[in-house]
Length: 113
Image (cartoon, rainbow, N blue to C red; front, side, top):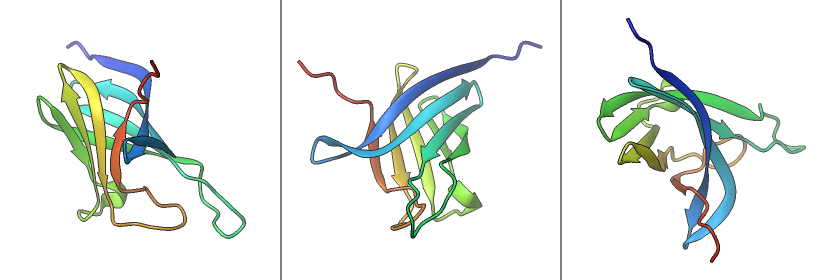
């Protein structure tokens, strides 16, 4: 039996109005059946939380991995592949405030010309 597992890091930023925002996440591990996303949180005096959390996503099709943070079916993280490479990460959580995973589409930072 051959087990294929790749550790790598690809950083993605939340994009709003075609501009990268401060919120980020990393795709840190990828195998044939799963993919791991690391989300980052910012703590403050009024909001204390872990700095990051790893979420395991399962392969749903040849172009999609998805999973539910906190095992909550109302929350979804979906990774879209194009030509076998991670193209974007879509987060749907309806969370706001402290220690939340921010809704939206996360993309790699575009290179400046």
